[in-house]
Image (cartoon, rainbow, N blue to C red):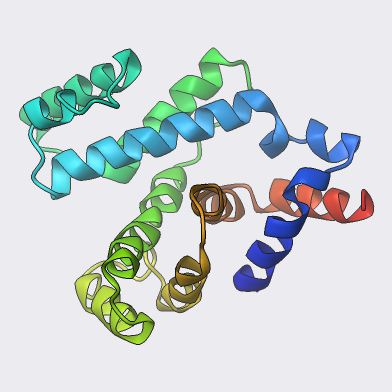
Length: 202
């Protein structure tokens, strides 16, 4: 199901009706907060799990003022609490942005899980870019996440996301896939309404 939805969205994302564009997940403020959460997730994952240092992340040429603030916040939190919850950090940034942008969202503890599921796409993308065969990448990610909770990384979702990630052909498609994983997980009804409105607008 998820695979089919991505393929449809890649064709229909630019053809949404006016009604679809008024829905939560299509609002610019929501997209801003979503993107901010994705950046926070990447920073927190690199700091908490991939061994990047504060200095190396701050020295990245793409690091702007907001990213630098997140980097310092993540490392300060790690020093203070020992946290390794990259999904939780990104979820907090999402809801902080949502409050700032006046989206009126009620915090859902499931947001951390929905964001952490991006790990599947992240690590599979690395293998794809290295030329690892898809079947081998699937076996590798299952071994890598084997000791993690199935509630966070359901095996059926891994089976769906691996071929979808290998099908991605551009940065725009990669971002759309990450959006799809997050939105269908945390906002399934809103995403369904957007999808149906998009189809009606054709």
